[in-house]
Amino acid sequence: MALIGTDLSSLIQIAYFGTFFILMFYGQRIQVSMMLVSVKKNLGKLEKLRGQAHTAVLNSALRFKGDKKMVETRIDRLTGSFAITPVNMDPAGVVGKLEHVLDTYDENLRTEVKTIATGATDAEVNTLSNQMEISIGLDQMYRVVRHFYLLARKQGGILALYQLQMAMPQIMEEAEAYSSAISAFEKGEPIGDGIGPLIASKMADGAQPSEIEQDTLMYETGIDGRNVLLVKAKGPGGSVGKPGIAVEKLIETKNPSLVVTVDAALKFEGENSGEVAEGVGAAIGGPGVDRYHIEQSAVKHKIPMIAIVVKMSNKEAISQMTQQVRLAVDEAIRRVKNTIDARSKFGDTVIVAGIGNTMGIP
Image 1 (cartoon, rainbow, N blue to C red):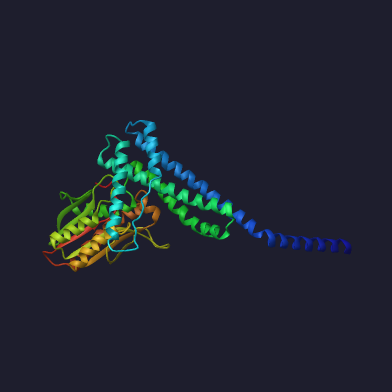
Image 2 (cartoon, rainbow, N blue to C red):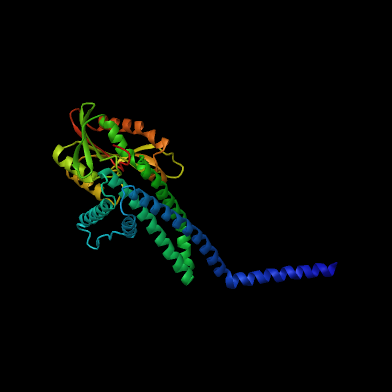
């Protein structure tokens, strides 16, 4: 019995030292292999999401009875398109350059979509362009992750793999958010990011709009003795318009005493969707061009800027508007009216800009 116990103890020691030496010499390779398997699994999910988005765009485009081969070719070409940001070594004038690049990109995308969907209305062109942008975004995510995955597999770089693996949860969350937006755009339903235009539309209360800038409307109404100018993108197609330029024009011509921007904002973990918050500044996302126009003109004329936001997750912002977010509309309108009452005087002109995508919002 003692001999058996000694043999068992020796075997355990040999196994322990054997495992130690294997991990010492091959531990990094094993770790790299495990991380590569994990990344490859997520890469497969990304490829599937990219394929679903591509198919959805193709099916939407084919509703307009175009030549299938031509439509497929143009969509494949558009999926790989990109925009090069301007040189910013000399920052003077960089906003104007960036705005020109983005306008050119948007116009090029719309022109291609019009060619694909012959006979589509402006609203349908905007919606299809939004779907195309989702497909482009998912394709770029897939290409970037695949690039670093293949590079790490080729070179065995554990540091690059660590960085990629750390970023994967955020990348996958964004990819799933993009994917969930496809069905909302196919149905033409309002998305979470449309909360700003929805609030502006409800506050307009039947007032007739005028197009103040490309795809951007202005409603003139009265609230508590103030002349209120409501700005929103033109719907019901998916458009964000040019609210920055529109607000800048109104500041220069209407001499307002207050600018209020209403937009969706990303919530922190633990916060409730649909929570309304107030702050100071211009609540408007994107690359910063529109915010620049508002800030420049407001600073020039010393006009206070108040921001009111409705909080939601990234997925909620670009997918069909949830009930929690929709219920925040009345509270946000109440906050806007309270702000107008507190920060302006009887007879003043106030600008209220509802920022966001007008998918499904007339």
